[in-house]
Image 1 (cartoon, rainbow, N blue to C red):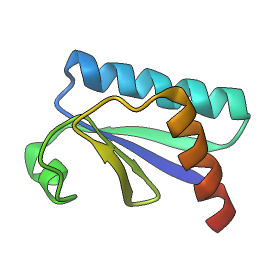
Image 2 (image 1 turned 90 degrees about the vertical axis):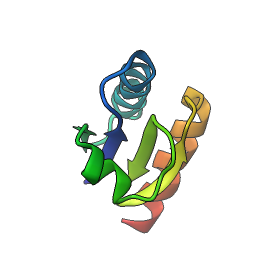
Image 3 (image 1 turned 180 degrees about the horizontal axis):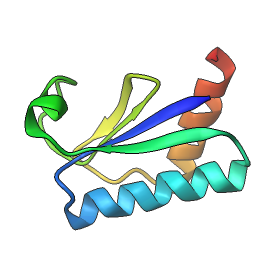
Length: 83
């Protein structure tokens, strides 16, 4: 099972990224846990400089922007190859 984390304080961009991630998981019909990381020290532990951030299986995939659904789909598919 994939672990997908959305890093951010809960701003509009963070919520949008969470929606994209959940939609991709649903469309791919895969089992994944999507969680939000909202505490600043926890976010900083990933070494990102701006939010929102997307982490898949503890690997930072993007930060500081909202990736497209196609990008997230590609990253999730790639992560499934390594599980």
